[in-house]
Image (cartoon, rainbow, N blue to C red; front, top):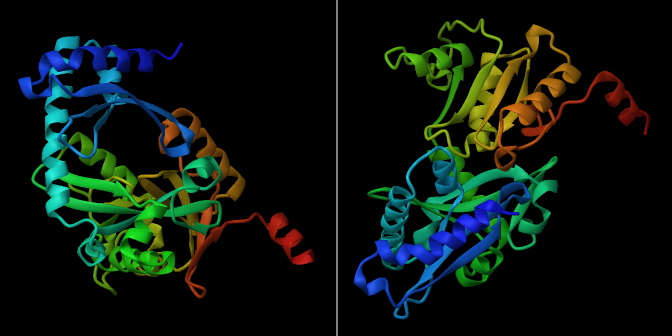
Amino acid sequence: MNTEKLFSEFVAAKIKDYLPAKYQEADCRVKESIGNNGIYRSGIALHLPEEDGERIIYMSRYYSELKAGIPMNKILGEIAVQLEGCGELDLLLKKGRTEDYQYVKPYLSISLINKGANRRRLLYMPYMEMEDLAMICRVEMPYSEGLVIIEVMNEFLKKWGVSKEALFGDALKNLWEYKDFKLQALAPMVEHLQDDRRRPENLLDVPDGTPVDLQEMLYILTNRENVRGASAILSPKVMNKISELFPEGFYIIPSSIHETLIVPKRWGLQIKDLKGMTCDINRKMVSTEEILSSHIYEYDREAGRIRQALEPKEKKKGMER
């Protein structure tokens, strides 16, 4: 029995009691979809007769609140506020001329997802491959309450009159030039969570040639928002800076779609041990929807690309072929 779907059905039946009078004629139904890594998502879709589209709110967060003991009436009230806000966002998007590619272009961003675990989603989306991963594009438009995030689908390319290559070229340019990425030692970052005054240093901001203490074994690489920050590894500027910090080389551990861990090679850790650690983290500490990969990567600075890190015996087999 899918209890989250049952919860969604209950919300769809009761939510109008928490909405203003104009919503009483709205059609409200359960909406199901497949999220990242094939994870089932259940939500509610509300459609007003005078509106072209429907307002969709997914229920995972609110179902978790219910299980945590939050009263149902409080949850329904919060969902009602979010549904009303969707109308404001819809108006914002129409005013924002989202059908105009030149307007949208500065807001293009890239996310990394697992290619194999998202085969069904990728049928409907433009994407580019990188090892066992896939790059997908998103539009991230800021507004007063945060970000409007829209994943780019195949039909958008026809509407915008652009090719997949042009789309990713523009998105990668934004990624390289405008994203505020950060590289911080993991231990001080954990301490910062416990004491906000002890802000860890962003090593990407350290001027070239400046002495810096690099005695930690693990460093976390992400973006300013700590959301979908694994895309930082796509920026040559970021990767080259890390190469300067760790000239002996480094491994990239995909700890989730939100961040990666950087491990300097000077510590002598074995790839098989890092793989074991990554699998353990994915199994125990990362939700299925946020898993990126269980492979270990490294950066080839001369080629300017990310590749899977192979153990010596695997490299030998590849050379023999």
